[in-house]
Image 1 (cartoon, each protein chain N blue to C red):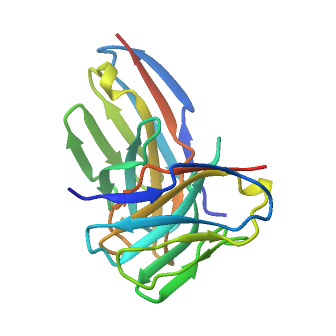
Image 2: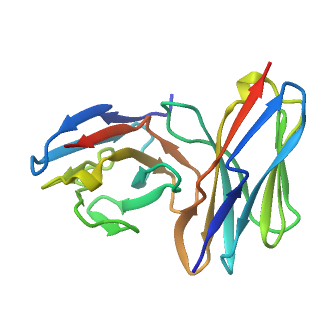
Image 3: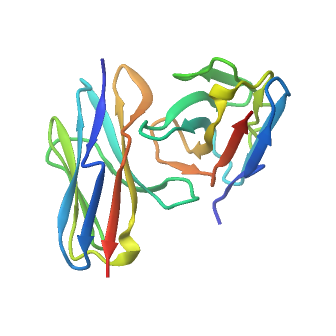
Length: 110
Length: 112
């Protein structure tokens, strides 16, 4: 069964403490992997799309990378405003629909 | 500004009382979708629409209906709601099926 697993479920960091979030998938024939950010009381907000292993995308303190089995969202020197739940979703070739991970709740303490 | 607007934002109702959650987008996107979000689970797709008058089932369509009579609107209909449909619902719109989606701010439904 195609699955998307995000780890850890929750992560607490001090402001400035860099770390990484993981999204692993068992989908065969990846078409695209999406990262979204979700703030409390809001809908997910698009961050990145990655299409092939080795690809990297950056935005401010965030960098997303992709291998054949997983993606990492690296956060460098985070600030409290980076606190949110980060979701990944995978789309595969045989079916354009998305499979979503359960998310990682990131808390950055000042 | 790109917007997906859902109404209502919150609703508490009783089992069996038909309800409709509206969704409207201002981006002229062809693709629209409904999801439900439950604690500990990823977003699960209920229905999606590739264009006007074209809708299809997602992963969890049982108990829901949709329609797409106009490009901008994609209402979600619960004909006879049950407590297991208590959830947080999101509408989304995208340029196409494999493009990033814009999400509404969600509708929290409680079915008693």
